[in-house]
Length: 258
Ligand SMILES: [Zn+2]
Image 1 (cartoon, rainbow, N blue to C red):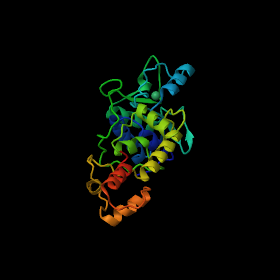
Image 2: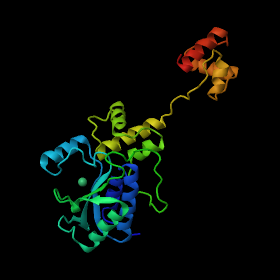
Image 3: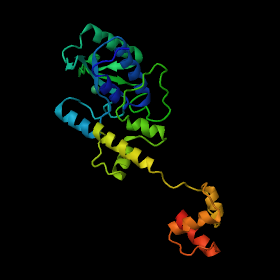
Image 4: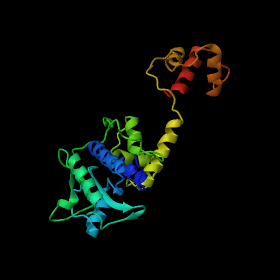
């Protein structure tokens, strides 16, 4: 399998798409790699702010862009590191576009009112019908994405955490990533913070709600013998631990938090 000059960047962008679109784009870019068709997938999902800027600049004409819902990608023919904006008619690019259409993409170059040659969109079951979630099944032949840190959406999906833009915004606020708009740099920063947070393991949650310290310790799989309890007591600032009922209750409250 050939690796293209812009393989890493393209795979990184493809990873941000909604599930069905991602699967189709994966097949499409693999086809490009296998046939050494030099392209760059330079943009996939777009934030509302980015789209507003594109409409303002005339690069786009709609606020109902399929980019906003992860169902579109933009590509440019390349040669080595150079982008070739006037080579959409190149023979190998025509094959790439034909492959895209065979996979179910609509090509913006076929549009008549607003020709948009870089644009491929997956109409799927309509605008906003493709989903972001953990149900995506990658084709067997999908190469592992060369990842520098990986995709935050994939990470969240793997942890069964809502990976929608709205929830990522919330997480960004919680983890101190300011003015989150979903840029690659912000996603990387957030991903690193989430991973760091995950590695400082939180205390084991216990379903035990009763008043026995020993039963509580058993429920979180900690030693509950007297000498262990003495150690916990010292750690939690309970002096002269003798194992009395009131001390046990006090220790339980401190360890469990209620
Ligand atoms: Zn586009």
